[in-house]
Image (tube, rainbow, N blue to C red):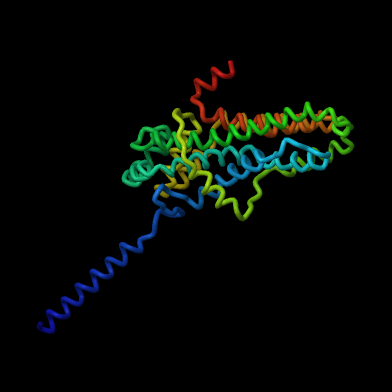
Length: 299
């Protein structure tokens, strides 16, 4: 082989190798890691973790109480959310669940920036994409499971507020009402724990689908699509929903008002079960229902 030909051949091989390296090391979509079953976006997970953590911690509250100190601890545990934060976290959680639908993720990636602009203007269009209905069904089931578990746990605590009255200590007057309420208010908001991210990953990986969309579900699916496309700014504009937000704020207000009016320990347990657990749990369940179904259930 002549020297000139050898140099040309070597240069061509180097170019091929470099091209292969460039294609194999191309970064994934910003802030996300792809698995066989879908996408786990690290940035979105930071928001969704607040929803997973609150619903898990509150639903784990034991309905048995031995003394006023135990009640006080759980009053603060159930207060561990700020309504606006939880509203956004609920939509983020729905989005994380939707991103576990492989066909939907593939469709979104193929759509590119044009799809992103379309979804930013019309979030409801995300559900109509190929795989969108399945993604919505995943999101619906994920939220409904959490809401139903929390509401059921609250119902058990409410039942205890009646049965525990057979114990004399539960009927005693609360000696530090204002301080107790202040501590509950200070407990609002998400406090991260090291294992929260792993728990979130396990929770959204749970199988299950439920039909039906709602404003919250539609926004969750749209946020999922925009996140896959790396359009985080557009996604942030969809992280609220009026009815869900009003429901969560009302639950929190009713909780505070109930505690302010409570005079005995068993009444505190009632406030805990109804307004700190069942009410927000039901808010989540209602957020999965189409608007016309929600209106009918309130009539």
